[in-house]
Length: 180
Image (cartoon, rainbow, N blue to C red; front, side, top):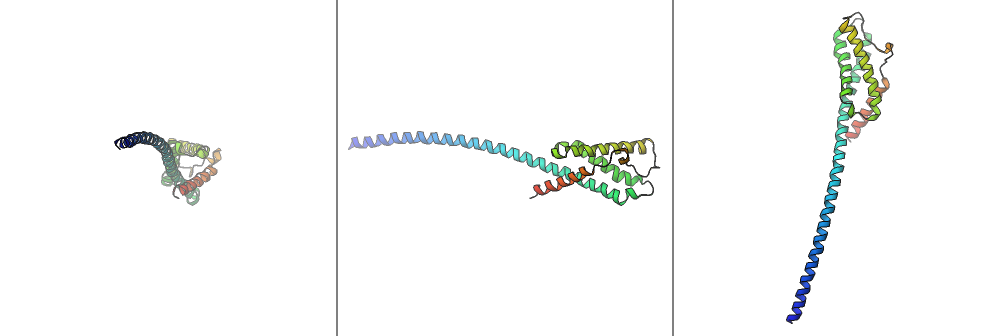
């Protein structure tokens, strides 16, 4: 009987040893796969977070452009194109500041714009550059208040209405996607 117990005990030890080796092997393999999965998940998560942040910043930028474009549109519809005499406050506070603000937003934050809007942004910047140059020449350098409004459309630089439309549409689209 002692010999039989020795065999059972010996076989149990050998079996336990091999079971431990196999368990260790599977444990290490599982750890390796888990680390690969974790790295992949972190990479995808970083990409998703970066894209989310870009979209959030883009919506913020487009929202500011949207508001200032509306401000300009209202200014032209309600007063600027109808004024009888030059109104320096109105021109400086609404037209000048909105033109400058939109131009600066687009120049300083162009990296947040979707590629589809880059050409349209360039058209807006060009229009505002020309308007600001004409404003500077007439109001600052020449101090000419006889001209009641400054327009650059007759000079070949009409306001790019399609750009305004595309910016507003993209803002609404991205805002709705972001806030689903």
